[in-house]
Length: 360
Image (cartoon, rainbow, N blue to C red; front, side, top):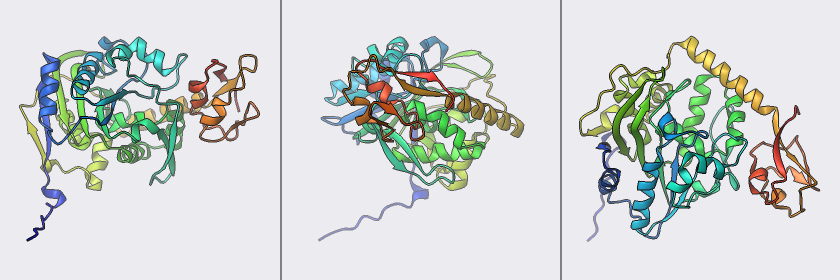
């Protein structure tokens, strides 16, 4: 005899969000994984994606706390997972590995931090301005993706947490270009949603240990916020920040599109309060000005490009082999084809490729 299990309609499915005390991170992390027994780790390729915006100290409260990364990595190793850690910051004077070392991420990853900007994969998306994006191959091909966003504010999106953290699957050099292709706030938020849908995290653990608001005031919240649905996690974080979730443009779009239903969300444990927490202004003029600022920044970044130092090049063809746009041949860069992903810079064993300011 066979039985057919009728699946619950989407609107009946519950989205659980757990708020866990972070005083002892090892205990807190074990507790969080215990809430999701369906997440089998043994012998699985697990990618841990923190938020590595730029070189910063943990006390600046703009990057994931290395202590959280270390705790999660240790738990994964203990449970026989194959672990990789990485993120894609906007290109700086040093590469991702050096950035990770200065942020404390490399040590926290137990040596498992990897430069994920080297190998990319083209993915088609449904966006009116952007038809395809390049994403880090190691991230989207992982069996389990664990996102470790930082609880923080953002000039455009008001809050930058779970949904926004997935923007990091885009190689750093391409982010300014994507900003430029999305001239309005809604355009950019639609893009964030499309990128989030490419590879949704299997588990999200928000670093809400130490937080800074839009005016620079610091809070010691000492919490981890966990769930498997980015929409639900961001919704709860908005409540903790003391703002109406629909004020956040990404959440507003999520509700409009039916991706976020507040009635589905079940919050486990009491909501902590951040008294006096300030977020960026949400007035239309503020968003317009912030959008203009992003486009100006993108235009400035567009003046930079990779350049080859032939005196250092040993003609190993690594740059040509890794270039997704096939813009490198005969040891020259075709700037009409170059998409400025900087994969060539990251893969060059001779350090023969650098970022140079050149109007092209």
